[in-house]
Image (tube, rainbow, N blue to C red):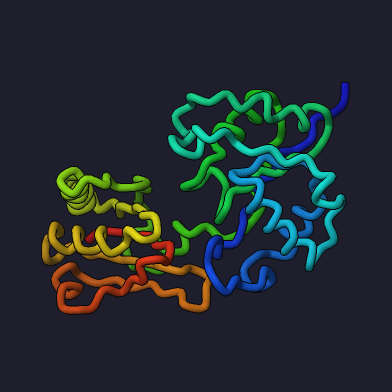
Length: 253
């Protein structure tokens, strides 16, 4: 019986869908890119974006195999839509290459797989099957935003997306604000591009004057910005967000 390969969690740059893209060497550790170039078996969020990323890697580190000869498997569509963090998806079949002795890469469209992205089911399955998990260094938007916020970095929670319905969204913002003010725990959430403006207006309408609101957008891109102020002061300023740029929102005290 062959020795199992390892599961490598391969971070991707945060410029997915953005123009222009940032040179990989500016935002990714060279050792991470070299490790990615050696892998020939992949599980990904989207095969097309995974191939595009690997083409960029190839410009710095030649790939072990041509792209058309690699094994690239997508996570199922239901995992994309509903996530796989609740344990409802059995990812063990995806680990077959690792059980056969091949190192296997897990990659999402941006940032670290399984962090605010699908992939946790694959990592869980690897542990269950005795496959060693190796997380490679790279950009994680949530931690970059938290570090730049000035809010509590010792106690924080990421809560994903807020409801799209206006009434439910307002209710959720009040819940998170109450928790942040009562416990000091920073509350972090994200929104899909083109909904930034609606979320920003909802935050300013609901948050108490002295609650601190921080937003980081376009992280690692030339237009990257991180700003933090009280809700009261934000109401006197223009909206700091481009509506089409990925953003991380944080509230605290």
